[in-house]
Length: 102
View 1 (tube, one colour):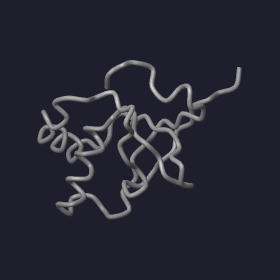
View 2 (cartoon, one colour; view 1 turned 135 degrees about the vertical axis):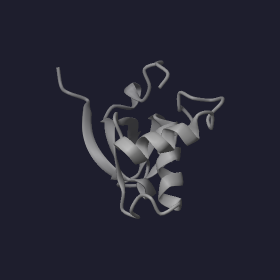
View 3 (cartoon, rainbow, N blue to C red; view 1 turned 90 degrees about the horizontal axis):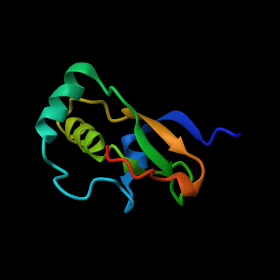
């Protein structure tokens, strides 16, 4: 069986939220706490993405709040402009989401 998921670092500018994202409601709940955690400890677990239509761009299917927290921290100058998130990249479109919430 061929491995269909790889891990890579992707800058925030190359990430966007997919329509298939697992979280549909209460997206901003706990965002301040998430920001504080990431500022203190860094990103503890990867977000889940798949390659977008444009080369080098990725769509987030899991980890939207972690992404939003990093964007907010970057906007506040607490993360560098070239900050990259650790991502698990699904290579096959059929594996974009697995139904689990993040």
